[in-house]
Length: 195
Image 1 (cartoon, one colour):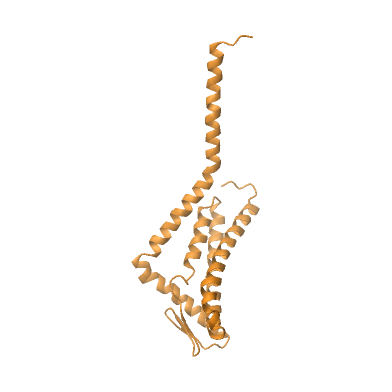
Image 2 (cartoon, one colour; image 1 turned 90 degrees about the vertical axis):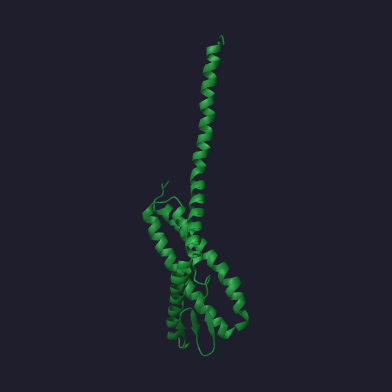
């Protein structure tokens, strides 16, 4: 059987699309990961640009920390702690704490929300997961404020450790755990979900 130049050219033409199709296939396989990372980075950048703006610092953030202080005060008073809340301050006759920026759970909520919104899933799952996750993180922050307040009263030496090392790490782990749980939930609801 002879090997003519035409057959050789034909073989080369067939090889070129195969190499191109392999590269294209690998790129398409990695595209969802790149899209997620890019989307997450853009959403976090938008959050920080907005959150660190003067308008946000003057008109939004004070209301958030005030709400945290007021809700925590209401719950503590149910248990007879005799607290009062004024703006970002939560105080009682025996202890006082000020809820500062960074203790409002907004960064953990932003991390969770950005990861959830950037992840490839149907929008109905994103909306359900977003609002449920933000509510859980908000309530967890109320629990954090209350436990820190009680730690300040009953275990003042442990206050700084609880504030800086325990609760900050716990918040990130809970936000990550909620995101992983949400991913598993979306995959269970739609087993063949690709987008």
